[in-house]
Length: 213
Ligand code: SF4
Image 1 (spheres, protein in one colour):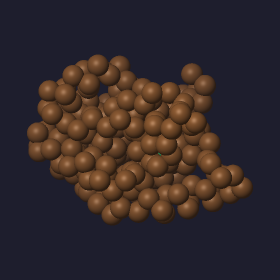
Image 2 (image 1 turned 90 degrees about the horizontal axis):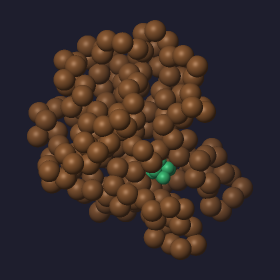
Image 3 (image 1 turned 90 degrees about the vertical axis):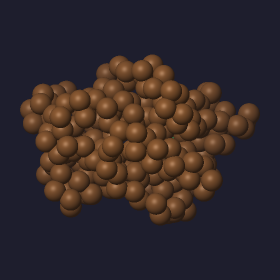
Image 4 (image 1 turned 120 degrees about the vertical axis):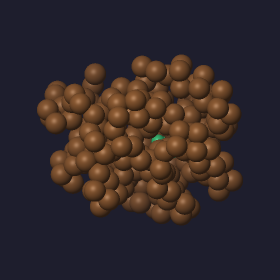
């Protein structure tokens, strides 16, 4: 698939690492990665880090959904509850679209993935985990190859394993289980631009559904 590294380094394949920190974007996207990793007998912690969700009421709904899931699965989670969407917008525009009024989706999302994955890699390293991963690897609506490529690059940068698995295989299971668990299921990816694209006829790209973060 385009954008994939030809081969993952050997240490990123095979057996699951002993201690892994999983970036959590939302409850519905996290249920499968967390459950699969717990089945593999890894020591699994979550890391909720999504400061760009718009508006604050939506951020709170997603945060509460993750807390509900963590209780259901008995998983420890590090919560980054600081809400700072303007930091994301400023950094993203400076990085990917300094001259344009409206940032293009591909470049914007690449920046978004990289910031969330990098914070996870740093938190994993600082807290003594062997590896990091992300619930973004579950979503059918994200650029899976780009997330994988960024994860591999960050693993090298921080000297920590990026645990890769294509959790999209279990897509329907995740939908069914999140509904059964009564988790909040969002209607757009998260940032202000994704909300505009979901609801404005001018910018509408495609119907965004739950699990799109
Ligand atoms: S659409 Fe989703 S992945 Fe892309 S920038 Fe917005 S929140 Fe991030």
